[in-house]
Length: 310
Image 1 (spheres, one colour):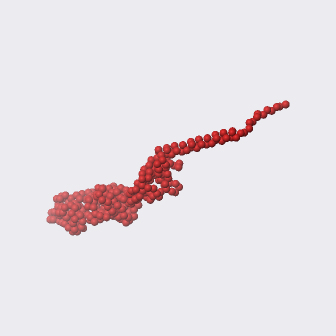
Image 2: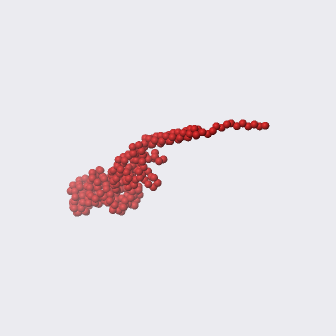
Image 3: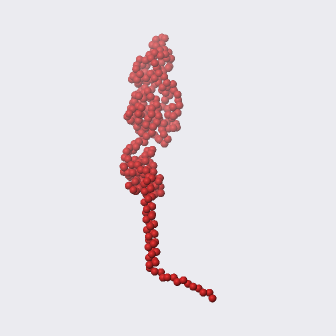
């Protein structure tokens, strides 16, 4: 006969149940404390690694620099015959049309050199004077015009000249234009207003109007200055900074802007916290953005990529 024996199971008491409950409660509290401590430590580490910059209220300029070709209304005056030329007016003088500016002594006598139009007379030239027809100009970019090698010259009092050779140059100083290549992505339209800075020419900004846009690549634009600058009578190339627009407001680095779906915003540091603030981007100029929605002085996170998990 097979016999069976059974152990005696003690009764389940309230005391045993309470002990297990307290243990579970203590374990839960400990886990919660660890989670809170870890979260706080992570926030501290986030604050340690983020970089911030103060939002500023200022003006940013949409501008670019370029080498511009000076385009003038000018004409070369040539010798009427072979002979020795004598200069009769000082360089830079303003003369009327048909004024005598020089004479050429020939074997048969004196021949006068007259200004065909009113303007400033100069006795030097760079060879571009007969190259820069406007229609021809607009078919080439400035980059391509730079490859042209014109023949400059100068008249010295008493030198020998041949008939048809340049003797002087007359510049109509009432209109000065600049021709310059546009950076990729920049477009101009005729009659658009811009502002120029030319430190080598003047310490004041000069207004200008877009006269025409070229058809070559890169695209170039012809601008007409609002005022006459005498120094440009003698220059063919000038470095310019062209200001297309100005934007004023609260400025932050473009890299600080993050997108929450279709909504742009920035992270701000508030003492020991990081908070997200939606913004409206008013304008973007190179590495800067003008925004609405935050205040000057706010500490903006400039490396929000470290917060990508938020």
